[in-house]
Image 1 (spheres, rainbow, N blue to C red):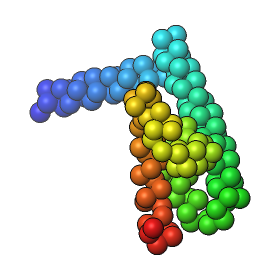
Image 2: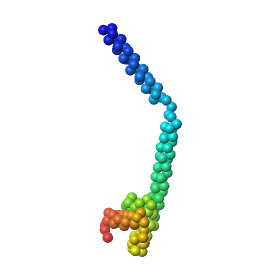
Image 3: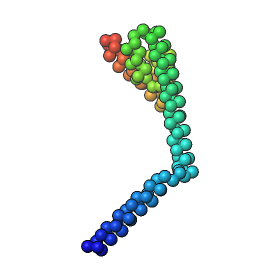
Length: 134
């Protein structure tokens, strides 16, 4: 019985000491590599915040231009939500008021063709949803 008790005390001592060692390891200051990673993450989060602010400015301008021209808040919100961030309200108007031939669609880059296609599709969605079709 006494051996069992001594074994229990020894086992408890090992567990407590290992827990103490683990706590000490956790309390160590971060390494330079960890700090660099943390700084990189902080920089990335700051960049995301700046980009989100820029997107909000562009979206606000697009919404404002649409409201001045169209005057339908729901329709304008639909445009802002569905047009690519890089497409201004003025480029939307230009795309929709010109034929594909007039804007040189066949010669456009793949990205620019995509922007034209999205603008046309966005108009169809928003007109159907908020104006009642054509």
